[in-house]
Length: 178
Image (cartoon, rainbow, N blue to C red; front, side):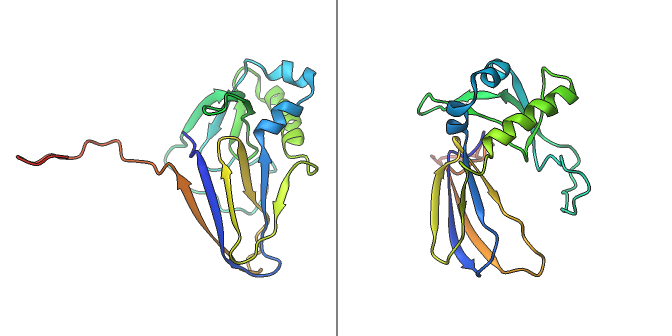
């Protein structure tokens, strides 16, 4: 389950450091052309841990995992608090629309991403020390701009809510109460 609320606080933000972009899945669904809306209703997307590499040949470090974790969700999810539909695909984590062949899936995802990440509706934040952004992580997506190895420093403090809890049973000792 994704975190419900996320905040970012600028601890270090040298001029020219990487920006943070925010895109609204709620707005994307509301503004989605009706023909594209009809094509995605009832479809499901597989999201994987880490990042999906669509561009190929990039120099990003890729984490080594024994197995990727994945989950399948509707392409259009209902926000649990507001009930509003959210276009729930992400360029970095959505691997495929499961009902479609890989090539068809990638074509449809490319159209959805062009709509969701249209620069006219994406907010790009240029950081200064002390800046604070708080957003609904179920309705919004965020992404970091390009980071140069020898470029300006940027350090953000991230706080998430609710904080995940361990599902394991806590041990009880004779006579102890929780």
